[in-house]
Amino acid sequence: MKKEVRAEIISIGDELLYGQIQDTNSHWISQELTAIGVRVVRRTTVGDNREAILNAFAAAEVNADIILMTGGLGPTQDDLTKPLLASYFECDLELVPEALESVKGFFEKRGRELTETNKLQAHLPTKCRYVPNEVGTAPGMWFEERGCVWMSMPGVPHEMKKLMQDFVLPKLREMFDLPVIFHQLIRTVGIGESWLSDLIKDWETALPEHVKLAYLPSLGEVKLRLTGFADDMESASSAVAGQLELLKPQIEKYIYAYGNVPLHEAVGILLKEKGQTVATAESCSGGYIAHLLTSIPGSSAYFNGGVIPYQNTLKESLLGVSATTLLTEGAVSERTVIEMAHGVREELNADYGLASSGIAGPSGGTAEKPVGTVWIACSYKGGVKTKLLKLTQDRSVNIHLTAISAMSLLRTCILGETE
View 1 (tube, rainbow, N blue to C red):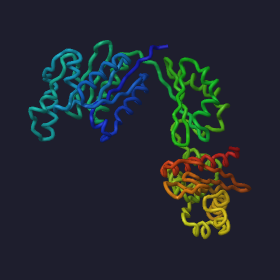
View 2: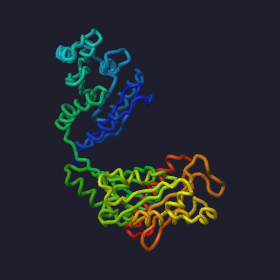
View 3: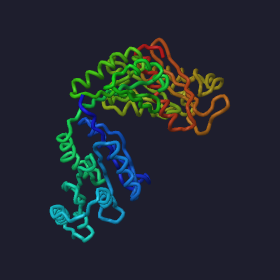
């Protein structure tokens, strides 16, 4: 198989460390490098600090064949990338006439005066290749030094992307005999990461060297990413497909989709395929389940509507929940949520009624029913399924987990499965 080509991305700027600007550049660059077969082994963020930047350069060249940098290329004194690259590669900064003409043209087109400070943009390290920036004033700088390829780009996203698409990506394809990297995302729900790991540990141990597995847990679900490395796309995708076929029988009941299909969309697809509908009755989740379901275009084909009966009187008048149930068992109880699910299914003429009632927090809990206690239910013709959730002290987390759990419960009912 072709040799692995490794890359590191270095993002430079105090504003990134302060949280004033989100580093979307690294995410985008990683995707583009993966698409051409370059493996990103590390992403580093450093502030506008001389020692930190030089240390990042030194660490990167040990780990990577390709080092891509963004930020720190302005003409002011706090922009250190260019002078530090010159220092690191032991060369001078010199005026590049072609770069100066480009900067002049940029300002002339906008009717602005070119200042002495702006002219500094055209002074570049003598060991770099000047790469024109057609949409900004800071040029790109390409180095082939110390056994690595280095490319410095502006931090402004549209400027960086233009340089990547027009120059960097084609140049890397030309320079390196790149392998193919193929990803397959497997989305699971209803099982935690550690339990999932225990379930598939023998399969994972037996994975061939050219197929890697990663666990990507998030609130309420776990994604598995299978990555195949090969000389061509057919071989890479075939290797991953073969391992997936071995994996599926072990965890099939937890797999709800592949790729970039979220749970609420996967549930909608199931309902649409079966010609069935759902209605929601949400207390503690406050309409969030309905929001997720209706965020998908065409959801009117399977979502009949929803009710948010926060007050007990509305649970009674809108959904037919028994006053006795509310008095003796409380709003947060299995009996109440069952009656809510039955009521909304009948009132809104749906195949499934999905209900939630709980204590989202941060206040309102008791010793018997602490914050994070949530009941969910799914009613369908001939039966009902319920589940007690014991969640967190965080209101927003509890609302999100309630929605995920409710849709997972709905999915099991649609498929006729037992959780």
